[in-house]
Image 1 (cartoon, rainbow, N blue to C red):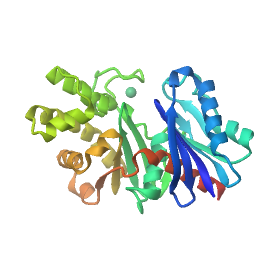
Image 2: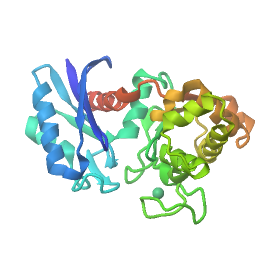
Image 3: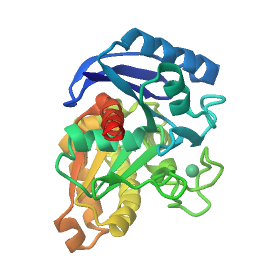
Length: 299
Ligand SMILES: [Zn+2]
């Protein structure tokens, strides 16, 4: 038995089959082509389901970008990256069409659950997940369950204001956390300071070559990152913070920079029980977390 798992990102749709024990049996991907709108996206989802569906498939588990009410499986907010996406009740559409159970949940919430089920947060019940990418996404797990909030849009860490009258954010407000601590922000900072346009990996490559200039840039960016992180530590008193997104490939090196920076901002008793870990399931985390939720729904 298996589950069809689909992870819809802004640029790519990852999909595959996941076993009931959390093994990714098969996976592939295709381009989202977000700007073509929701009808095109639905056609792609149908194609994936029809390619993978057989009598051994228990349901369809979808992780997706945007603000999603996972309790009903509907997109309730976010940016207009995929025209028409907001307002779509994907679970209703899929269950009606294929007569098998479906779930839809926000991608970072899914990543958190995927890491809890099969990755860096195994055995943990109180932890936070942050993904650093174009923006900053968040997931909160308390007592082994997602904290969704009244509107099911809790954990939008990226839009916490950390600088007064700061950089304009895509959400319409100014000074948001993600404007200073996302990968986008790191690239901007590096360009401002050096005049050169490097990508994230190239910036870290420079640091590994002992460039003081780039080390200072990364330290400044990490300082913004832990400004937000410190606030979250005081609110949630987590035992673990899992950091995902492309920069998590920097592993222990970046983890140490974050830890040193956080030490200056948070009291010792919070830090004594706190572990920072880089995500372990990378690209699979969203599919795994969505599958975890589907299996819970079926039970
Ligand atoms: Zn914002």
